[in-house]
Length: 265
Image (cartoon, rainbow, N blue to C red; front, side, top):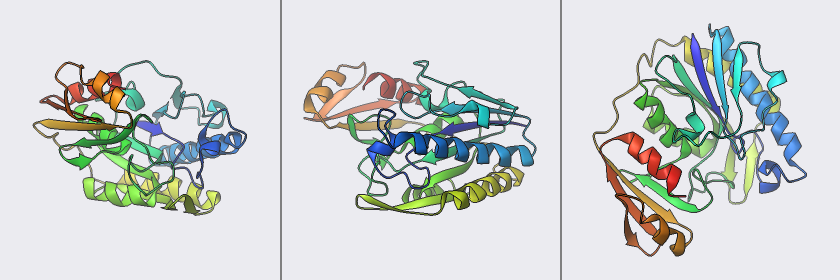
């Protein structure tokens, strides 16, 4: 069984402030280790469920956070960014049995995590088909594009609750709850136990057996923090300026949405 893991840091147990997620900050090394540990727990759960090959995308900041030496021998790790529109899902293909998301966080404009954002700090909010889009949603649609089901998510409580509405068969592990500029977190050791058990359970389930169909059409609204950036990005082919700081874009193919997000930032 071949498994794909996309990992971030802002949904790792206890991660609360930029100083803990910024590689140039003093508190980052601790949360780099916690990110590695949570990814390892997910890998261990996948191996226990029968995975023989695991591909991990280090998908935070510059993509060089996870210590590969801590991961099982069957794991390959993608470090850095290729520039491909799949971004946090680089090298995903239809021969994977399932996708797992580890350390994910709430969307830009959400109060579910003090570090909430979507893809880039220049975006104030992204909507797809009138629904606020998190990185979980964007990357789930990428999995569906390749025909791969999404089986597991760990991250903040608000994202987990939202994700269950998006994907009813999803197994989730809530690592913390965001309250204003604070978090209420479970113990890191408890998070590791729950992630490993959750992944094993998710992969042993008979469903999801296949990815759901994608919507037939996509309407994308991107609200920028800067009107100047919105104006510049409104010149992307097919995009239009809807207000001083918002562009809209419509497409039939989801890859065109990913291409927009990759280039309009």
